[in-house]
Image (tube, rainbow, N blue to C red; front, side):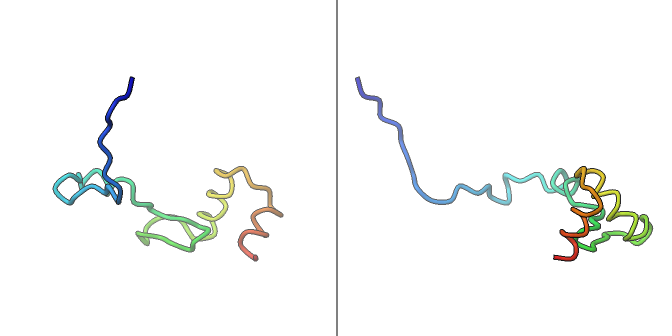
Length: 70
């Protein structure tokens, strides 16, 4: 018994008309201490954001230092 399944190789990205732009805006980061990025200046200090992100990742102080320092 064989079943024919159509296949078209290549990228299958969504087109612009298939994308809900407002919903994707919710996924944009507000801040990331490891990348030294803040979308808004009214959020906490960069140092606080770095510590917050490290806690979210359950990193120890030496692990965080190794990631930041290289």
